[in-house]
Length: 231
Image (cartoon, rainbow, N blue to C red; front, side, top):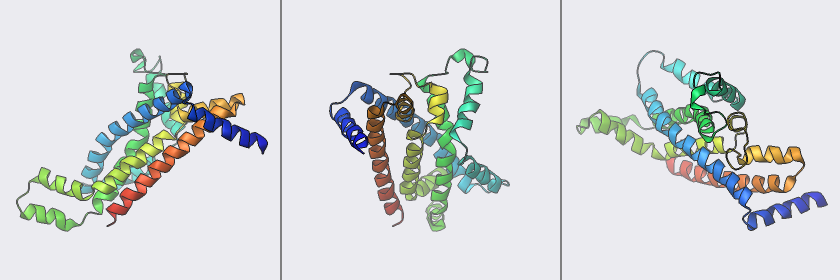
């Protein structure tokens, strides 16, 4: 019990002093996760919108595939991307392996299905009368799409936040594609695993506190947005 309490207080002291290593790890984590979320949102939101409003055969199958990809383990994605960007892979000459760019690619693949699936759900909940009214008032296809997206904006924002929360806490992709290089590709989750293996718990606990605080903040924002979308 004393060991736990000592580690906990030491972790808070580390956070309070603004430890350079801790701040760098948090910076890398936020940078990689934010970029992955931005790119995934740029692809996932339009994809989800198009799928929700398409009337083509196979729509159900596409949605089923997206829902299946939600359960895809991060290590599988890490292995898949590794095959392509390793030295013997198709994109080997780009020298992407063990870089932040590789981590962004992996995390992008991880959350595109999530954001797309949640966007489909958000857009599908919009009352069909909004679309009919927009058409009646002379809106073209693009203007009608903007009306629908505006009505679903809170739920779509929640989808983006959910995606960010997913990637900031993952470890498989970051470890396999980033290599856990100190000061360059080491994230909060990979650093926690490393420090645990070394038997050094102070930094691991400090990172855990930061990660839990961020996760709490993300969930609070998520719940606030969901509350607005349900009104």
